[in-house]
Amino acid sequence: MTKRESRGFLNGAKWWWNTRVVGLIRVRIGSRLKQIKQRNSDSITFAKDAGKMTSHTTDGITVILTAYKRQNYLQEQIEAVRQQSIKPVEIWVWSNRSEDELVDVSDLADRVICSNSNFSFWGRFAVAAMARTNFIAFFDDDVLPQSYWFENCVNTIDQGFDGILGGSGVLLPKAGGYSSKLKAGWNGMHSDQVTEVDLVGHAWFMRKEHLKFMWYEEPLNWENGEDIHLSYMALKHGGIKTFVPPHPEHNLALWSCRPDFGKVVGRTSVATSKMADHKSIRNDVVDKYRADGWKIVSVRGK
Image (tube, rainbow, N blue to C red; front, side, top):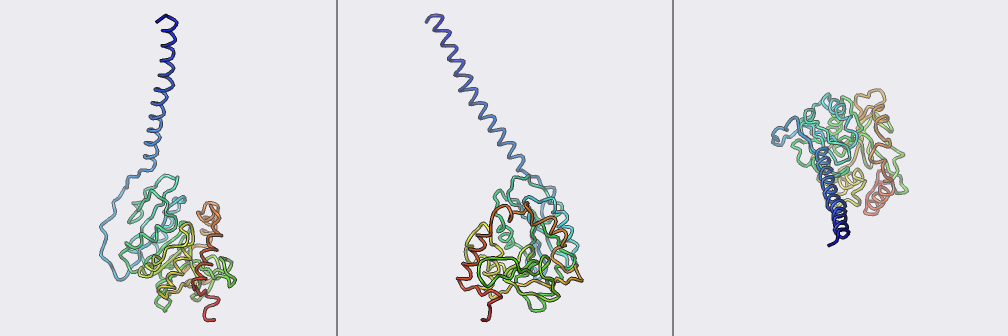
């Protein structure tokens, strides 16, 4: 081999080493470091372990809160729940997968469930099946219940309105499709009386046994419409109606949400429901269920 050929061979070997071998090593190391960094940001060490699950009780309330992108409001929510005139037995936090880092709230809540998948609105209702209390309460992450909300719900049930209770009720239009223009509750009509509605959202309160009807049929769409699905399935399979407890103008302590909190914190571009156009999905769900035989409040009895 001549000097020129030898030099050419060495240059070729050097090029091959720098571009192929070293480049491949850098890619693999970089990828590995990225995986480690991602895993570390997704990992969480709980400051407190949950206690042993108790046996089922014939009374009591389990509260289920959610964490997605507005975890900074959790502490205030938990404080509001613990200050209820009827104290909950336990507070659970269901944490959906998001690009935000997981936040440890185990020192604030009784149980924390962190998911590596975004089960959207459905996960909290599924995990509630493991509650050991007679009643279950759910709250969206932008709802701050006032001190007599649980007592308001229990009194409503005791008065004979034993159904799916909520803080923001919707009365659907006769013409079909979905519309939330006619509401009852903290962000709608304020009444001293219990109001029957077609569906409720923002905050739910019910007997645990009513929740089973939600899973009697597959939802039409997993992207949205869990509130519609729950109320219709409960009515269809259990004869369970949906109500909004009293939200009197003169007594905000009974309300499901402090109005300034709900209007400032939630229903903005940050809300999950506002990050995509779910109106068409909700229209489809309502139309499908009405075709299936759903008699909404405005036409019932005719």
